[in-house]
Amino acid sequence: MSAPLHEPDAVVPVTTGEELAHRLAAQHEELREEWCRVPRLHAGAREDVFLHARRRLAVHVALEHAVLGPRLDSVREAEAELDREVVAAEGEEPESLGFDAACARVAVSFLRHSATVDEHVLAGVLPDDERQAVAAALALWDGAGDAYLGNTWSEMRETAVAQITRAG
Image (tube, rainbow, N blue to C red):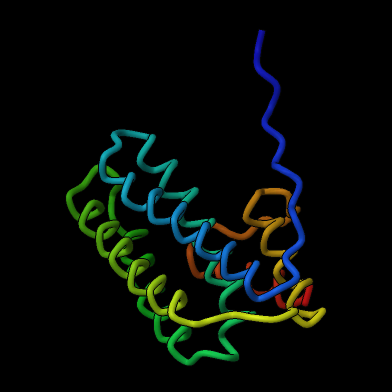
């Protein structure tokens, strides 16, 4: 007898800057754990976790790009560093030392990115377009969004940004 498939939890709407900051901080923690876990795994598991973490990171960065990017130049700068490091990791064989090093650079780049975003104080009610963008991003994050994001980091980022900004 097999266990039923896990259904994503109902997405609680994010309506304020404080709620968004809390949600982003929770995503930062989950992503940090995933990226730090990759080098400790072996064989196919490391590639599976890498692919999952890469997809979630693309959605997360696209959300920050859509909502925080217009407010913070530093968010765009942190995105560029992440882009370079994830693309470099994609080019390595999952069982290689180069892959471990590339994933470590992604993790460090992500920590810098998180610190940059966490410095910004969000407050007040979010405008309708931002609430809709957040809702679309949370659906993609949880896997409830019906979107194929792509096969590479660049495709995932572009598709996630398009999905999220179209919603907003």
